[in-house]
Amino acid sequence: MFLFPLVGVIADCYPIEKRGAAFGKYFFGVFFGPLLGPIIGGFLIMSDLSWRATFWFCFALGLFIFTLVFFVLPETYRDNAKFDQQLPTVHPNNNSVSSSASTAETVDQPAEPKVTVESNEPGKITTESTATVYQEKPTNKDAAVPKKNINPIAPFLLLRHPFVFLAAFASGIAFGTMFAIETITPDLYEAHYGFNSWKTGLSYLGGGIGNLLGAILTSRISDRLLLRARKLRGGQEIKEDRLTINLWPAFFICMPFGTLLYGWTVERGFTVWAPIIGFGILNFGMNQIMTATSAYLVDAVHGKGASVTAAANLVRMVIACVLTIAANPMVAAIGPGYTCVFLACFCFMGASFMLILKLKGEKLRHWSGF
Picture (cartoon, rainbow, N blue to C red):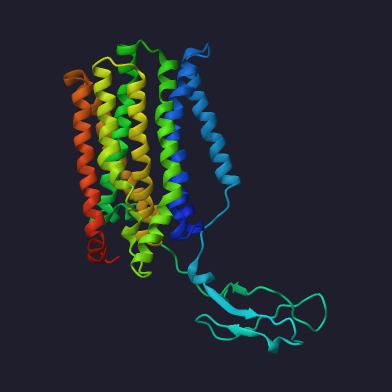
C-alpha cells in the first residue's frame, strides 16, 4: 500500500539528476525487508511464542508503520499550476542606498511585484548572494475548483503504452526470479543441508548483502552516468539515459550466473556457502534493474510517478506470483538445477526486452505521446 505513494514522494522531492541515488536507497529498504523477514520469522517460530507470534509481530509492525506514515510523513505534493510563479531575481549592491541600485532578472515573469532585500542598517541594501523568490500565485477564493474524477483503473491503462509494458515486464522477470529462488530455499536447505527455520532464515543474509551492494553501486553511479550521457549529447536530455551501462552486466551476467550457481550447487551437494553466494549475486543484479526501471518510468511518465509505478508493480507481482507458484512443483519434477536453467533463460528474455527499450524507447515514447 505504501510502495506507490512513496515513489511519488521521491518524484516530488528530487530532480531527475538526483533520482537515481534516491531510488537506490529506497529499493534497498524495499528488498531488504523480504530477506530480513525470514530471519525474524524463523526466530519467532523456533521460540516458545508459537507460530502465532509471527502474525502478531506483522500486525504490530504494520500498525507502527501506518502510524508513522499517517502522522509523521509530511505532504510533498506540489501543485505546479499554483506555485510555479517565480519573482524577479535580485542582485543587491552593498554600496547603494536604495533598491533602485540593484539589478533584477525576471524569468518569464513581469517585473511586478518588486522585491527588496533589506539590511539591519536603515536605508541600505546589503547581501552577498543572489535571491530568487517564489510566491504563491494569487487565486480567487470564490472561483470554483474543478473536481478531479477518481478512476482506479486509469493507472493500469498506462500498460497499453509499449515502453511502460516493456520496462514493467523486464523488471518483473528480475523480481519474479528472486522470489522464486526465495520460495524454494526452505525446502531445499532442509532436504540437502538439514537446516531448520532459524538457520534457513539466516541464509537469506547473503541476498541482503547483495541488495546492499547493488544499492550502494546504483546510488553512486546512476546519476553520474545519466549526466555523462547527457553531456556527450551536448546537453540534450533523453529519458533512456536512465538505463545506464551497469544494467547490461547486471541482467546478462549477474542474474543468470547467480541463478545457475544457486541451482546446480544445491543439486550437486556443494557447501551451503555456494548457493548463498549465488543468491547474493542474483540480488546484486536485481536491485540495479529494479532501481533503474522504476526511475526510468517516473522520468518518462512525467507527473504520474505513483500511477505508473502501480501499473508496473501489477505486472511485477503477477510474474512473481506465477513463478512462485510454479517453482516448487518444477523443483520436484526436474530438480533445482534445471529449474534454475529455466529461470536463467527467463532472465535472458528480460534482458532482451530491456535492450529493446534502450534502443527503441525514445521512438516508442513518441508513438505513445510522451
